[in-house]
Image (cartoon, rainbow, N blue to C red; front, side, top):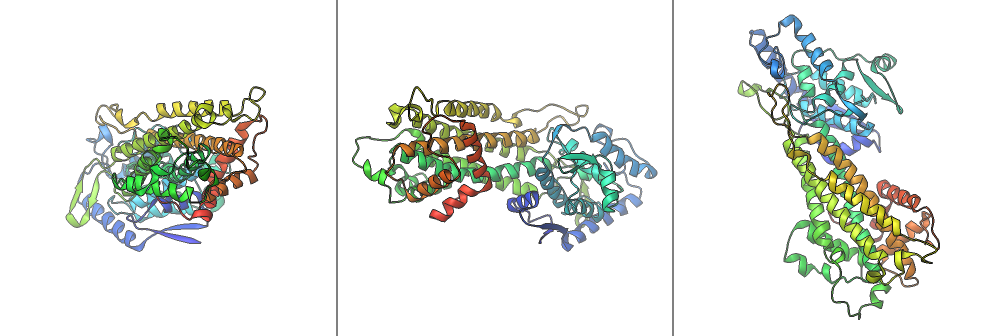
Amino acid sequence: MVEIHLDGQSVDCEQVWQVAYRKSPVRVVLAESAREKMQESKDYIQGRLDSGEVMYGVNTGFGAFSSVKISDKDIEELQRNLIRSHSVGIGEPFSIPETRAIMFLRANALARGHSGIRVDVVDKILEFLNADVIPVIPQQGSVGASGDLAPLSHLALALIGEGEVWRGRDHVEVASVLQEKQMEPLTLKAKEGLSLINGCQVMTAVGLLNTREARRLAWITDLAGAMSLEALHGSRKAFDPLISATRPHPGEIKTARNMLNLLGDTSEIAESHKDCDRVQDAYSLRCIPAVHGAAKDAIRRTIETLEIEANSSTDNPLVFAADNKVLSCGNFHGEPVAFALDFAGIAISAMASISECRIEKLINPAMSGLPAFLAADGGLNSGMMIVQVAAAALVSENKILAHPASVDSIPTSADKEDHVSMGTIASRKLGQIVRNAEHIVAMELLCASQALGFLDPKRPSSAVVAVYDVLREAGISFAEKDRVYSQDIKKIRSMIRSGEIIQTIEKSVGRLEW
């Protein structure tokens, strides 16, 4: 059992992934240092309440109702009403791993001790998380400012014993599950409902999971590029370290090294065409360091931004007990996250687009010198003709999805909340971009392996051979005649997501650079 101690300061992408997918048993507990900070903050707020002070969100209404004073006897009902009224999420729910990540980050933000709420609130989130009582949270309904209000309200709704949770693939009333597990719902006190829903943890959690998948895919896209380069009799000269040293973007330098590592020194295919008269390759081969490298840099910066956000205080107002201040602010606005997620979506779309360009080169006899559409008996068989068409369709879909969500805004809450980030939309569409890109890269691997089959018995580099052989062992055989290629694509994509292809690369040439 791995035990993670939440202190509000040290969550990273790998921990979020570990909690979300539970590849090994994991338990999350609140660190003692966080307990002390939360208690200090709570005591400070209670003292100001006891003195009769009026504070937004503690004993007032919310949003446009911020000027309405609420009596002490109604404070608990105020917090319950907030959660109930804001639970207006729409559409399909987030997956269980996504919801676990959301719960983890919501607990971590509150653990920072800037909300003036009881330790019991974080303990209850972690009790649900550790007991695998996972709320059903609809994906749509957040504009990404004042926090992810609607989706986080569905999380809070389950904590107070209302709403639904997951049981297998079904949704059931949380009350019955709590009774079975002998767990008590949370009773909300002053400010606690507001603190549970102010923040960007939905967009951040979903964004972190998607960008981690994109990071894995970037390595495999390097491998796909290497396979295609071998099949197209491409040159290794574009990856010479002298070139990337003149343009020292980290991603470009590392990608060039990855390509040389993958292509190695021992390729019968390369040896067979070293004296050819081709001056230079198409951009989709020659510019792999520039394009793949830029995508890696964008993904890395996105993860860095989201990790900062994961360890940030996003409540309103924020409590600074040591400074004797309660400050109204806008830390719940999702723009830093929204910008980063939109940028990642653009980068991954471009990385998938250059992969499709290489597919087109592979099926085009004028560029490849291979049979048209990689068909063994063209005419009778269509070969990879529609594989490229499907890849083109996904590339075009990604172009639409890559339009930035963050350039949009619409006033809400009677124009009090007049500028919003749309960051949660950015995080959700990023997931679709990544899934499309995985399929496109799977299609490139399929076409490249088919092309290499035409070059037998000449063998490519050892790393390319290793992946080529793994694909063959998985049933992705050379297509002597047409078959249902969607099944091949599905199988290769599964191998991408399971890590099997990455593990094959690492056994051959070691870990690729990031």
